[in-house]
Length: 150
Image 1 (cartoon, rainbow, N blue to C red):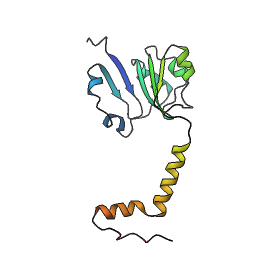
Image 2: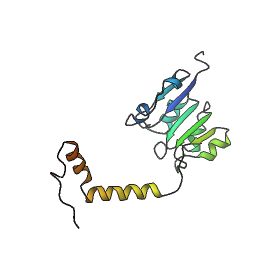
Image 3: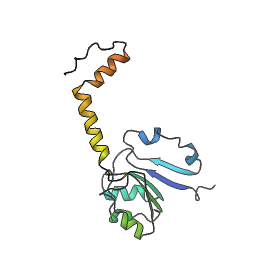
Image 4: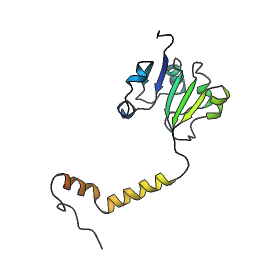
């Protein structure tokens, strides 16, 4: 496959190198040029300049804003993927109007995941679960952590 035929894929907002480590990118990299952007763009102009050569953008919801004014400046953009099912910072309608294929990962407005995480964090803090986990892993079951209240 010649360089002119290869897709160019931008993976945005990989600040913690999570995207790069969470999957085997080798099969995709054999067919496409994949570039991971770890730092946020300085401005919309900066994003437009750096993303101009890409035809596929993999975005992370609520990180890099994608208003119509940005997507309209990306003439090569053919596909946009978003983590999550919705994002207030992404003008999906503008991309669809331009003929850009817009995809997203599963999930939706259930509200359950935030509530579940908040409850889990409260329980972990109230019952010293991280300290207890550390103690158990060090071979000190029930040592070094306060007794729970009844």
